[in-house]
Image (cartoon, rainbow, N blue to C red; front, side, top):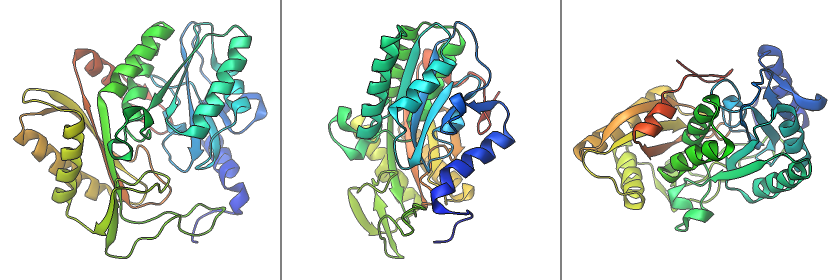
Length: 329
């Protein structure tokens, strides 16, 4: 294992200490490093809180800031934050308009966010919850799908509506609309190493890749020889359009996401391949993002997220945001 760190057991907290030292616009609630939240609260605004395991930067921490989210519960690498931490963050950032919990569709996260919601309701704080479930190949049942990089679009929609002082119901509806219209397919070329484990979380031969793999190393639909960017784009887009049919004249937002160790050059090659396929079918890309938005430690690979847009979603996705990790004017 080759990593820039001190001790594996200190990996998460020392990373957090570094972020707090570098970025005074974020802070921790109640002295708990893993209760990560904005230092700039806005009275009367719906508070949006996410959370999940470390190892996915800029997901989840990187989305806390202006125009996006207000707080984030931080777990160990690939581990859920606790219910107590989520509750502590909510108490710190809510300002009277209620709280939206917005996070990925994973069992541990669901359990702990639900427990935190019960604690807040006992304090007469209104809470709504919504999960991202955009990983097309993880399950035919939409409700059982994993939440992966497509939650980016849900964060954008919810954050914009909250910044515009929408009600809790309106903010949740904005996030749900984005979530209902986004689909993601991902693939891995290498495994990654969890610091406290010290070895790869799965194995791939040098000339092998995994298609449909999850961001924690969950199995995909096939392992086989490495394919070209055009071939990967076609198989991914075909899977997405089979699940979410689009027609000529439709417009989409596109996210080409690197999983941690893929060069930006490669991601732009993939962007080119995906756009060519969409253009062939008369589908216009309204706006796109290329880079690292939901990683998996140092895994080499990428994911493709496509979100069908209308004027409402366009306005949310165009809304300016500013966090220590993400800036859009």
